[in-house]
Amino acid sequence: MATVQLKNIKKIYPERESDKKSKRKKGDEPEKKTNLQITDEGVVAVQEFSLDIADKEFIVLVGPSGCGKSTTLRMVAGLEEISAGELLIDGKVMNDVAPKDRDIAMVFQNYALYPHMTVYENMAFPLKLKKTPKEEIDKKVREAAEILDITQYLSRKPKALSGGQRQRVAIGRAIVRDPAVLLMDEPLSNLDAKLRNQMRAEIIKLRERIDTTFIYVTHDQTEAMTLGDRIVIMKDGFIQQIGTPQEVFNNPRNLFVAGFIGTPQMNFFDAKLERDGKSYFVLLGDEKVELSAEKEARLLENDVPSQDIVLGVRPEHISLTEGGIPAKVDVSEMMGSSIHLHVTSEGKDVIIIVPSEGAVSHFEMGSDVSFTFKGNVAHVFSKETEKNLEW
Image (tube, rainbow, N blue to C red; front, side, top):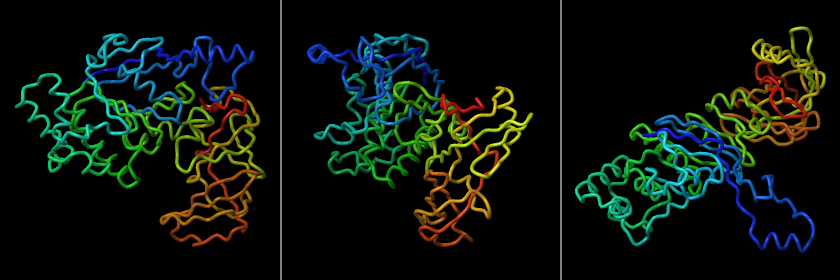
């Protein structure tokens, strides 16, 4: 049980001497292969990261590969040096404290089990290093095994276990230590879809049974939405938005968050925002939709003028209608309870989710449809800053 504070944390990877020499020889700037900031000090992998994590909170860091989420986790663990800023656990600065003295445990993506040890020995190993009495080791290992439903595998070696079972052993080895903070670095990414769903449920149950603070890293936004009390969305080393799963889904602060959170991803259109006194409308083609009173109030508060915008509407919020915005069907995917229609409209690829019950069972490729949406589900983004104009 612990609070964790990250204050303006920064991680810079210094350039190697060989890289500097090769630059000097060529006499020009290196080709920029990523969107990460490159300074005289080196590559900035994490930039001004600030976050307060409450006791027993489950925080998920999510973002595409290379955004800095695993680097941030490794700085909390002490596996990466902090270039600038402060890390506090229970109010104590931990920047220069050795990983073994931080009262944390970490679960890795690749399990990292000892192949020559049994499940019991793998789970007992960190306690043996601390010279814990044998009776206490046995008690803690068996309690953790019962929580994770792996008691029957205690005498087996890792090679005799499935991927999901191995991951449970790795989690068990972490929780026997009763850590103040449990760090998990993409622990489910090596599992198949069915096992991932099962293990997500196991982690939710585990969270209820042990008193610890969780920091979980993933690139899978479904994991983030189902597991986290709050989600931290990252891109290119910067925090884009922090909020509950519902907040980031309903009120994305910028185009990146809007496109990253939600499956299938949000549809984007080139549209116009029109202000008429205290009312706001979005114009898409010949369709004119008035925004909801709540959205209008926020736009009025920010005194947003009429302008060209990027309009965002989620696939599940679009409905087929007569005489709406015209579209041409490219692909029709039957997904069981719904049909995913891939259409072309207003020069854009658009996805529409249609409930399969009572709908046309199949939409012919090239057939014409039309759609609309309501004003309470429209998201309006600035074309210049890409920020949500409501916020």
